[in-house]
Length: 109
View 1 (cartoon, one colour):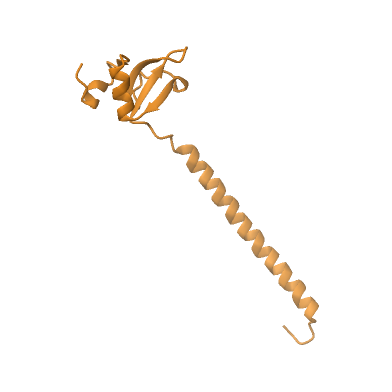
View 2 (tube, helix red, strand yellow; view 1 turned 45 degrees about the horizontal axis):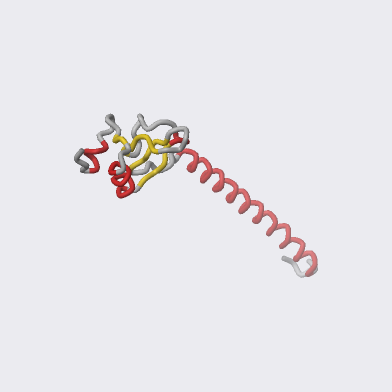
């Protein structure tokens, strides 16, 4: 810059430049947030290894391998650990006949 430019003019120029750069960074941030949101929408929720189908009254009805299509509606299935699935079978909850749960667990009836 020439010597004719005052310090105040230089500071105003710097401010305009920095505002432009900040706007560019804000655009990049917005694009990245949109990309992450789209990626999140595409990613299905994780499928549990085991699940129990609940009755309308909330009692366990059937134990399934995670992802079994016969497992009922999503609101009526709850994820289980392997130990919980075995315990439910031991307590008399039925094993799904379609997903071969008993074989997957190594459970002998």
